[in-house]
Image 1: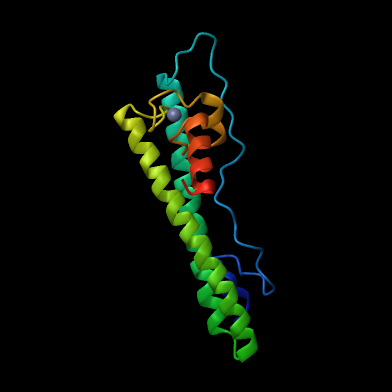
Image 2: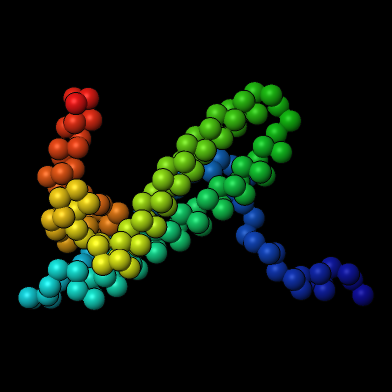
Length: 162
Ligand SMILES: [Zn+2]
């Protein structure tokens, strides 16, 4: 009997990576968010809290998946390069990846902070002035902790160095 026919039993544990270039680092952004409050629905209703908690947890999840993927790729690729030039460019790529990782780490902290604010009943209120941040703004940026005015003031201060 031929030995080849029985060899297909176990499937590959993971789909093989394409040999070519990987796409640029993936952004950890969730699918298009949207939230339509019911008529007369009060600000930060249970439904809204549930919605934002889910969105935030989704961001955490995509950060986790993303960083695992990247680490895998880097390990595989660097080890496979015998050429110094290739290695150098791979190292440049590595630096970019690290920067991306750092960005993700900061985002992760913001997301965890936002989830904690939901639990504390503070979510949706500006950390600076205590006013409502607003549903639209939060849908666009669930990790926002400042209302539009305070954020603008802050950016203005940063720009002018005041
Ligand atoms: Zn404010």
